[in-house]
Each structure stands twice: as C-alpha cells, then as structure tokens.
Length: 312
Image (cartoon, rainbow, N blue to C red; front, top):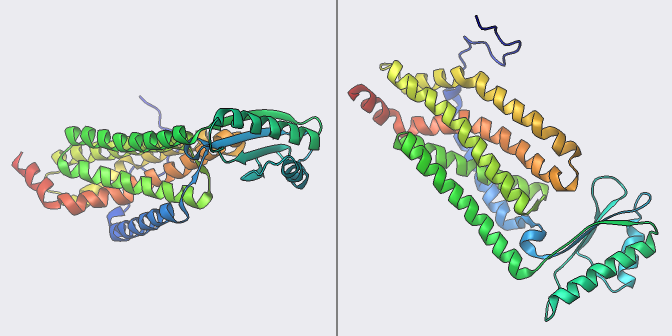
C-alpha cells in the first residue's frame, strides 16, 4: 500500500470553482499583456552586450568601490563609459562602453579595454579585472535576430505538437496562453531593466517549455474526463480537471521555484537576472494554466468538444 504524502497543497476532495472568475482572469491577462507590449516599445528593453554591441569590463576593487573616483579616472583617460555600476558585492564594478565606430574596430576595442584596465588600476591599486568582453555591432544585430527567430520557431513547434496531440481548440488555447505569458515576461523585463541578452532568450525558452508542460498535464486530464463524464457540462468538467491536477501543478511549480530561488539571491551578475525572470515565469505559467488556458478552452470549445464527445 502506497503511503500518503506528508504535505498536500489542497485536499483531495477540494472543489474550487475556478471558472467563476474566468472573465476577470481573461480581462486582467489581456490588460497586462497590452501594457507589456507598450512597455516593449517605450521605454523598451535594456539590451545587453550581446544585442547592442559594446564592451563590458567587470572588476573587483580591494575595498568598497569609490565610483566617483573611478569615473574621474576614466574621464581623465579620455574614456566615457555608458555606465559604471555596482553588481554583486560593494567591491564589484561593471563598466559598459559603447562599441567603437569607424575602421579598425578590433584595434580600437582592444585599446579601450586596455585603457579601462589601466585607469581603474591607477585609481584603485590592487583592482582585479574579472571579465572583459566585446561584441561588434554587426554581430550583435545578427544575434538579436537569431534570438527572436528562436522564440518564434519555439512557439511554432509547440503549436504543431499540441495540434497533433490534442484537438484544434486545445492547440489554439495553449498557444494564445503562451503568447500572453511571453508578453507579460517581456513587460517584466522592461520594468525591472534586466539586460536582455542571450541568457534571457534562454530564460524565455525555458519558461515556454515549462508552461507548455504544465498545460499539457491539465489538458490531458480534461481530455480523459471528456470521455469519462459524457453528460457533465464543460464548465464543471474544467473545474473538476483543474482540481484533480492542482496538487501536481502546485507541487511541480514549487519545486522549480525553490530550485531557482537561490540562483536569484546568490547567483551573481550572470545568473541573478536569469533566475529572477524564471521565478516570474513560473508564477505566470502556473496561474495561466488555471485562469487563462482553461477559460479560453471553454470559450472556444464549449459546443464543439461536447458534440464530438457525444458522437464518439
């Protein structure tokens, strides 16, 4: 005999009427997604080095960094950085410089990197350079295009997969929900001003995959119940299916959330943004499986799904 789990988020016999708030869920989701699209254009995403081109130098000073002193040293060396900011500990400094223009960019880039190293070492003796990266403008534009193509191709493959596995209404509902999840995450990036780079593209693709898996679990139970309860109204059947998978959905989401949380808190400059966006995506993806995907399925398939089930 299998033992019962020590903790459950809801009782096995819990019956929450999720469809009662379906209209509010769809309205709130639409408003947030529209606002996110607006934020995408104004103020826009903060493009990282991969997508805008330029030079990033990260260094660690012996003690707490004196940013005024560092900026003065860079200005004295004729270097005008786009930003001089802290990251991680008070000793960590990140210096961003726009990509050089004109001929012989490679030589100019190396000269700038050497100039930054010399300037900050003179201002703060004992400073260690941890990282120095440079990306040209042509390479960055190609990376940006490839990143957007990866997101579009991922959505297309998800649509094909769900269309093959489920009925048309399931596929359309899932893809619309995923697009809403994606736009909200982009809005979150625009608000938080995390740099949008190749790492963030990986985060968005991971969120799409996780959210798709979550919706497939709920849709599988809905499809099973469509065959099992042939006379039950679709609205009641959706509530039943969500309640039956709720412990599994919340348990999986909490596991992934707790795994990503330490990275968001202690991951440093490279992983903090990635993990924080992952945390946001987990919350959005889980809630959309309940409050968006199911109401959309009810809206589009209430008559057709029941008709096909009765006929079968």
